[in-house]
Length: 327
Image 1 (cartoon, rainbow, N blue to C red):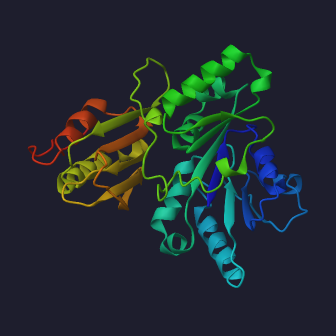
Image 2: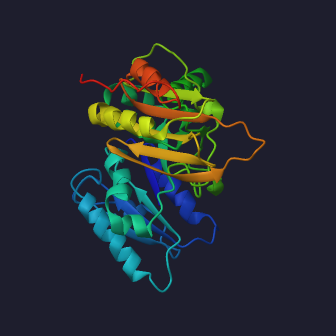
Image 3: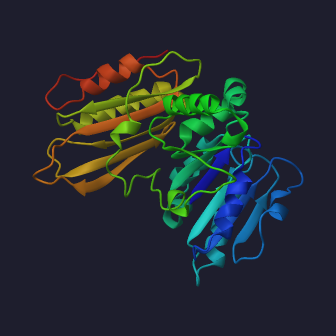
């Protein structure tokens, strides 16, 4: 599963057409969500291939029709039992918050069994993004949730303006690679099999994407990264994270990490969206490797000092962590 998001007019449909035109050999279903009584993207998308396109135009996929999304995913699974689909791409309306869509893959067992959420790809309009990010909460959410950020229409702005926007995006979400695209032209390998959301394949987080850079800027959404070489106490960590999401979960867009847990021979990969959190075993630590933990949190008004202090108290052998308090 790939969730393709981006604010209105950013170029999502152009990128989707690019994917459908590519001779990649994959069997792809596309779920189109438009906010309105009548959709037009289904007519815009190319129809000369084997891809199946399903429209959802009775509401925004992130709120009123998530039940319909679960139903459609179930129907696709049933319809293709003999010849299974390889990919499903969901193109959200430009007004969508990606969080509820991603949460579908946590909360519904039938969806979890049949589908693997590979990544969230966000397209950003270089010409209009500075204003959109200032004025629209949804635009910031889309950037914060991204596993890949594709900046379109850079030919319509100056090089200084493009560079300033890219720097702003990196401050908001340092773990997502940022790439300029022209009319959706980008390598398919950078869009599919990203494993950005679940970290099943990427068990090491690229350090350059996780630098805790302190800047003064107006965006609500920012990131916090934490590194620790000492082993962690899993029970303490779970207690701290449970308290954290209880009080701050609505503001935590994405959080994930690769953890060095005391007494464990393998990495622990953990991830979360708002109030939903889970973990799974990663690849084994090699005897020659330096074991360490890295975690990143992306959200609104992050309690940085609480995160820094609380996580430090989760180191194995250190006193109990301070539980997050109410606001």
